[in-house]
Length: 89
Image 1 (tube, rainbow, N blue to C red):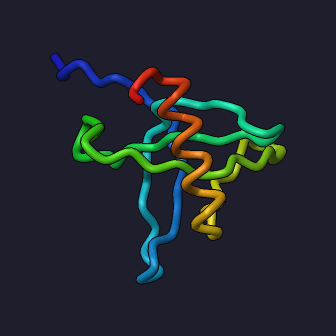
Image 2: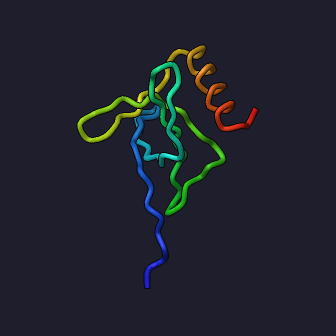
């Protein structure tokens, strides 16, 4: 009998070294009329929620594409908004 495997919605991002990294979607939200996705690294069959990453979600025919938020000020605003929504502030 196989171990129980929980399936996650995943997406792939490219790190600064050009490597593709698969991440699991742990949350989605909207802020200032834009969609965002919160991802966590996948380690084996589990997700590591110690470090969460926020990306802009751009709709595509197949679902969505995660885009890095390159502007540091925008990123900080989005992180703060997410933390307030999540009740962590």
